[in-house]
Image (cartoon, rainbow, N blue to C red):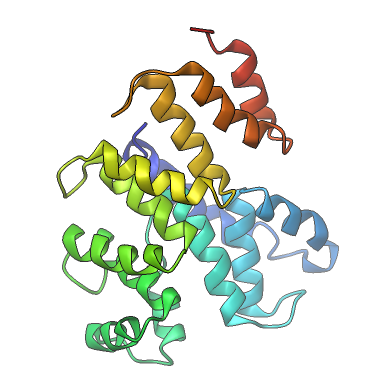
Length: 228
């Protein structure tokens, strides 16, 4: 299923609402609950938690954790990290060459940032070939977020030739690391026969890995999913 149909709506909600969810009532923030939601994949919670670490509200100011949670959120939303994040990370440098130099040295965070910038054309010309290049460097080092993003690009064929085999390969690598997004996407490939023969048993196998961790939406989907 393509994510691009939902990008504008979800991005609008996050940009305008997420930063203000706890702005006036930080002392009453249930940080434990927020972190739990973020860990479970709630993109609003991930973005909000990132903002708290950026601002040092209720938690020690920590830009590394700001980057971590915004990266997780952007993986789900299909949007790019705010350009201000990259400027913080590079301590004020904002020239693409600075990004490239750091990424070439093997810094996974920078490789991820470059991939996102090139995929959305922020601060650099939009270039999916370059996005794939940098995501691949991070994915080859075992970064499961990069592996999922590569899978999405190859599955959707956005900016590059569609390649279900490569999508399957990268989803599988991330799913084997217990990435829930990858497990759901992989299950859907088997369910709908994208690049592989339809196989409801394999689809259910991957869906159940997520459902067994308490995700009610997937649990419900399994109960209504036709058995073929």
